[in-house]
Amino acid sequence: MRLALYPGTFDPITYGHLDIVQRALKLFDRLIVAVADSPWKQRLFSLEERLEMVREVVKGWDRVSVEVLEGLLVDKVRRTGACAVVRGLRAVMDFEYEFEMALTNRTLNPELETVFLMTSMEYIYLRSSLVKEVAALGGDVSCFVPPFVERKLQEKLGGAR
Image (cartoon, rainbow, N blue to C red; front, side):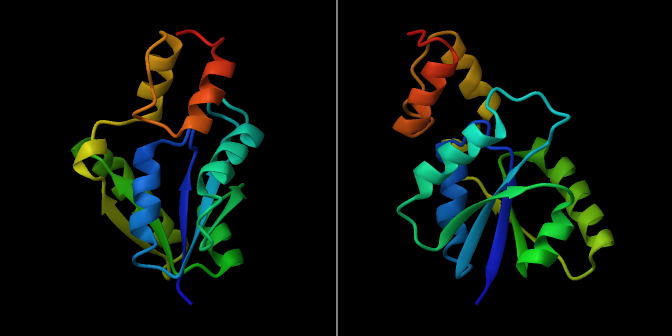
């Protein structure tokens, strides 16, 4: 069985993230969406809220599970027995950061493979930070996030719309 990890902060999870999940399932038997704790970064949603949102939007996919990512990704890979890490690339600006992270992870664990999936054209511009900004300003984010996530954004940001 080929197991992969898809790590991220998912603050919040978007249709772009879900596109990567669906496409990763074509390559791997199982996928763990690993929601990063990242306590040093400012987040709109708590770890528990992000886990709830991700679990809700992938609950119909039996080959996908959702777990917390605490500590180093390479340690999580070893603990789970994953054969690869999946990362999405939107544009050239993502590549440099992702390339550095992949090389760092490979230095820490030479067995670790990182698989980059190009984001589908319809999501190439989509970032969680953009979704949060549009939602905070009262815009319609229904084309960017699933309905459950949209409701959570409205609750968190005061229901502006």
